[in-house]
Length: 252
Image 1 (cartoon, rainbow, N blue to C red):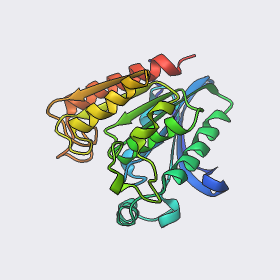
Image 2: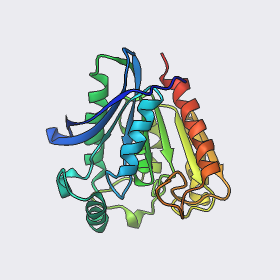
Image 3: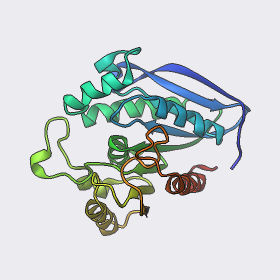
Image 4: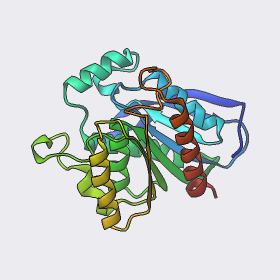
């Protein structure tokens, strides 16, 4: 893996679901490339500084990276991410279909870049992990997917609603690319039992996947900005797994 000290970072406007313009943060390495692409799907706290930093981290590792503001309709471009995230959570989240449309816009933006190598990876955590899995089961325009502790992949029928009409686990047969899953064994959303169900369904349908489960880690163990959650040894091993996975499927 090459590291690029120089990079360009900016906000861009992309076409989201139903053609709605939304803002996305972009980081790209210096140099001619061609570079693989990574689309980041932010978590329920929103388009936070953690995800902005993670976008830059991928550019440093040699990827054109983009993270769209999936909550922009609910709070506008300049609103405080914590406030918008709280509002969205109180309203039951965003519609899965809207997320797919917005993420498709981010994937299309990557694929339109002249220094792109033609490969795109997708990664998200928490609700974003759930969303990443849904996208990989709904669309066929990505080459690899990383799901970090996706909550509510396994859902009871009574928890389905207009925004979340289908449990992601029931989409497994349509998974279109290799999947990497990272989970903490002390997490309750998803619980180890739910991860077992998730894995069993992937095995049932013969999907290309790898799951890694970490003792001593709960929900959000990558989140360096949340000391109560962060587990440095498990997170660093997880990052090694992410880079190896994307290196395998996104290099060209």
